[in-house]
Image (cartoon, rainbow, N blue to C red; front, side, top):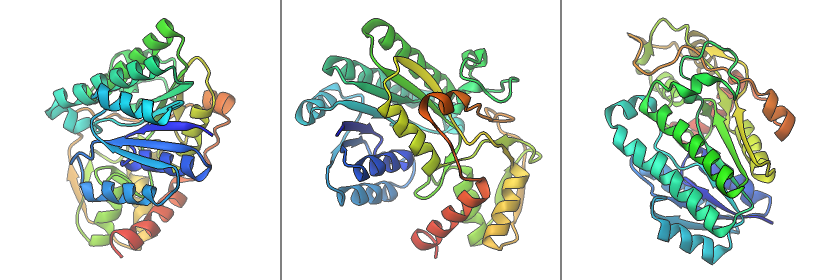
Length: 319
């Protein structure tokens, strides 16, 4: 049985990772500052769900607070770290880059330093597919040099977390797996992300903001598939490795909108906008490395995943 510190446990992906770890019998210490980047009520509901499961302990606070982290490590004998806490979003990072630096860079540095101090067996650090920017090498491979030229402050902070992770592995022989998620969606999803926005607008009969000509493509990854890969990264100390965790099949914006219309049975109201700064043309994961070393095998198509998401949304948000 592992004793896992999960940072960002109240959030979308963090709550799913925590739930799966608890389901298999691990102890989870979840830390989250429950910030208002999106509605705190949904984060409180996630915490309440986890608190119903045996083995969960919640700590509310900042990951930059090393004393708070050390206290949790000491009290619970943490053996593994699942670092998911971050300030998310490409466009907001352009407006306020400083909060992204504090949360993503300083926060990650604090987590790594405390993990080093307590000698954990393995740490998983969450990066982002945004680090690939507008790479011309498609599908994206983990060794792509395009990650050295991020095109948003958010992507730059995520690249910094990868570099820090490598530094701690190099200096202290820490086992650190870095994972790069590709547009994760599904139940309990983030309301600022496209799949949620599309569903909400379709079901409520409000306009969907369509940026650009609709030909941009995304590698949408169902949260259940992502979680299996993430937990495999927790379970396998490999020195230092970086993994793409995507679906590997891309969907254009136009195709995604057609799918949303089909599964909701609604005619969409489209509000056309120009392309946004910081947006990329395509995200597409080469997952061959994750298949080989983590036995990662995503199974959920975007349409099937959105059907599941739509059913959850109808029961929990807008019936």
